[in-house]
Amino acid sequence: MIYFGQGLKNIGELKAGETLVVSGAAGAVGAIACQLGKFMGAKVYAIAGTEEKCEWLEKECGVEKAFNYKSPTFLTDFKKTVKYLDVYFDNVGGDILDFMLTRLNKYARIVMCGEQIFPLRDLGGNLIWIIYLQALFPPIVRFSL
Image 1 (cartoon, helix red, strand yellow):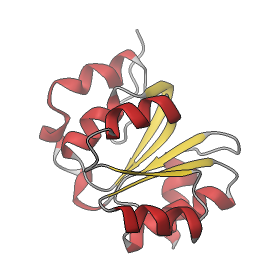
Image 2 (cartoon, rainbow, N blue to C red; image 1 turned 135 degrees about the vertical axis):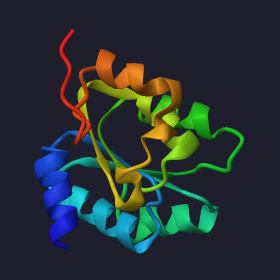
Image 3 (cartoon, rainbow, N blue to C red; image 1 turned 90 degrees about the vertical axis):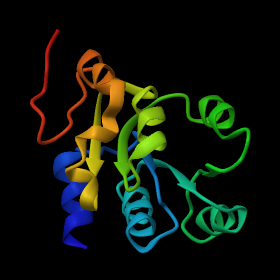
Image 4 (cartoon, rainbow, N blue to C red; image 1 turned 45 degrees about the vertical axis):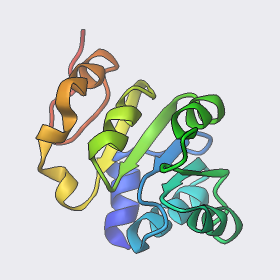
């Protein structure tokens, strides 16, 4: 519990009214991150892999909307609904992280969970988005253009 609160508060600097997106949201870690985000007053959007998990996240965890990343309309639905985000709680890396990097507001923050803290290779060519948007991405230094 301490990590989630500290991650969202100290690294994510999550504030009431901001938009939080949580990947891997139906797992133990993601579900707690979603609930803490709601408790902190954020608009919380979740990403999971089945319609059942998405329904559970909306009804039981109270997220604004849960998206099934396996849906053929996932990218379009996310862009239409969320548009851009302030804090991304990353549980999965890979293609989802690459996509979320294109949806960051300026000065967005990314909280990486578990082994996602280490494999910077998952950033691919999207590191430029972090630099351009001046996103805080610990332990990388905050860049200023």
